[in-house]
Image (cartoon, rainbow, N blue to C red; front, side, top):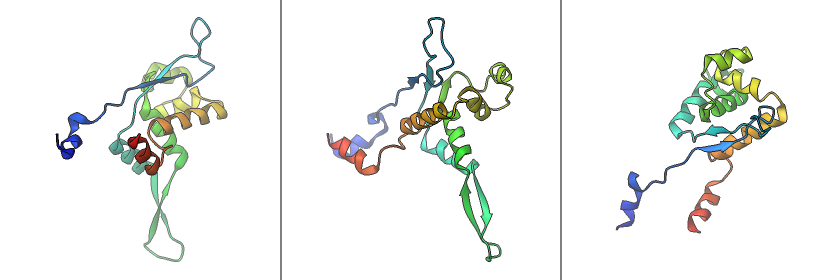
Length: 143
């Protein structure tokens, strides 16, 4: 098989969903933290989320010139919400139980402890490849 053929889609590894106990205050009957299910977000989905969270800010002293500004906290909430498979953050009964109207608000209501939310955010970023540099990925591929 030529090297080029290795780039074909059928040779691409499928990323599996991952379970993670995102919130310690939600537990099963045995007292174990509930397992949430997360998926990998695609590059295209990530671009759409980033675009939704970016606004144009006027540049002072330069009429009709703008610079992009990313609302990083909104971006992170949307990335987490897009990654969650279970529980269904779009479920109106679940949203109503927390008194919120969007998956992003629900994330903050469910993971309402700042340290726990930070750990969840770090987990989702790592899951989506934001923890490894391109050089590290190349080194891993060699091994």
